[in-house]
Length: 446
Image (cartoon, rainbow, N blue to C red; front, side, top):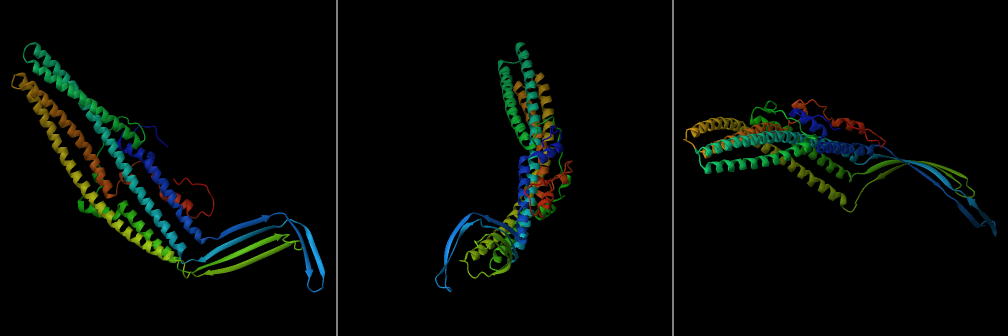
């Protein structure tokens, strides 16, 4: 259900994304579908019962000769309505532990799906942070560019006044007009970027943006040093744990394939009631219990190929686990470096803004006494605008980098962030369907 409230804070935006994002909800549905693999595997422990019923109409006309009484003939003819009712139950007692191994494999696949859901949650939350901070940045930049146009308009007015009294030349006026036109062009570009950010925000968060409050970093949730971050990520990151559960599932598939070489033992019970099976037989009742042992000797070699194939897949999953650990480690190191650079960039751009403000004030004073030209003032104004844009971008990068590091470590979750939102519990649906013997109703699972 979509909420109508605006996400005016970063936490509010994350809550809405967690509740409404279609990518995340799609992955949750995928986990619920994977849950059904466990009751499907457990069905191998349960009996299979079938009901058979037949009914029809039959005409019989037969003549028989007695072999003991000489030339004695007997003729039977008439209409019949043969019918039968029967129930057959089959229970597998032993199948080479295939059912047990299939159940363990399905449980590993469920765990892998849950870890994949954690990966999706982190990706969606990080996308929400990025969309929020991008819109916040682009809103500020658009405001800066609009104010810059206002300053340039005032600068042009003053330049024309000075031109009218002969203090400056027509060149100064043209320079001011050119810079104002460029400023208006920058406003149009900033508006286009702003509208694109609004659309992205709507896509990720699920609502139209309101007046956004400033975001803050989440460094307090990340490990204090790079070594600890790498250790935590390579052990608990959902990409790594997903690969581990996939390896477990591949191992169980090898055992399932090997189970095809073992004997199969089953017992079958049958009860059948037949009516008018012949003109002289009005009713027949049969009941039987039969044990069946099947020992595979040679089945064309397909079962051996499946075993070899499963072993190769298991080897591939081991390599996927190594790849996941290497990828996670690389992401942590990269994110740590980006965060350090973002922190340093904040200080540098703040100093740049302060210096640009001092320089602009100085150039304006010098221009009043004829020591600076109009172009010098315009350049100083543009440098100040560029510095402020750089500061806004650096502030955005600082916040996004802290969330990126938290995601790289594997801790970007509603629980860690302390979001006020009911968290999705994958175990609810799992326990609702695990031991279900019958029924087609789909539980909600939330």
